[in-house]
Length: 306
Image (cartoon, rainbow, N blue to C red; front, top):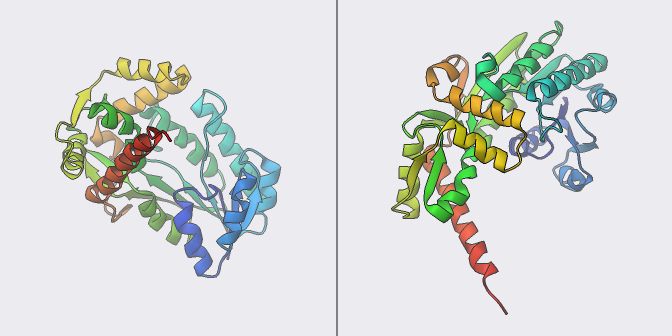
């Protein structure tokens, strides 16, 4: 098959692209930078340098493809996540239609089926709805839950203060997923996209921040690692202090409120539409402990003076 993939050599594609090449498929990888060209070619894939907002470029790349894998990559230039997603969704739909592609796999998100109460996750609702306007296209939506990598935002406070700050209570159970486990969902859907519109959720494990702290403290021997709950307002002010646009801050604060209720955010998941992967909390904590060690090693190295 001829397959086009957005997302360059990101976390998920780095697993999926080599597998597709091994199976003998012709894979074109869209990247926004020339710096990735040699790496893409080294995998045996075809690089295509351009942006996902360029409808002419996308139409040209998608033409003749048996399957197209879509994903949103990179930070938006504006401050309105919903409006940006709406614009991007129209670009995707028009490029797919003009290129006469009939099979699509789209990386979406948990919460795409929710209303505005889902905050930033609600933006994926616009993307899915726009793509579903195409009646002669088979579309598989992949909805991952929260990425394990999001927990790396706590790395500095763990290293410097032995603390994790969050406005989500420590005992709230949340679902997380590793890129490799998302890849195990994406790959078979690319190879055999189901007829019509389908949804598949990707999950690795379920645990609370307390569970994470306990396991990380055990592995790293940071015995005083602890949790500090902050208010929604404190979260907001912290993001604003880091120069995040206020509209985006509001969206993410709303998302965090939505995450406090697992009955809402995970309501659509069931045994028939959810793939549970193999990367568990204990596996991720080992990776996290190594990241802590690496930052400490870098700090020690920077203190060495010849």
